[in-house]
Image (cartoon, rainbow, N blue to C red; front, top):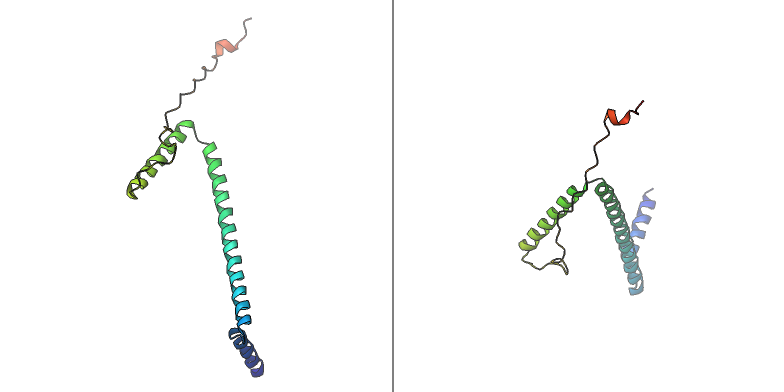
Length: 123
């Protein structure tokens, strides 16, 4: 058992201290590949999470009324203006001055439901 431990330790030491520069370069490339795979997995996970978040938000926004959407958009615009002021960047994105959010026209009200007298057919 002790011989196995010593052999494993010697093998680990041999891997840790490559004999020639080519072996060292190979080990470095393997480590880079391992790191890149980890970064790729993290990027894929982040992309998946952002896509799911966007889908959830789109579904939730579909359930909001026009007034709620206008309120949220104006609030978001105010937050962006405050953040820009805090960072000292008072510039607006291209075309932002043209995009003024106005209250949308209110939809026409539905006619009142027919009363009982209107629904009864004359006899």
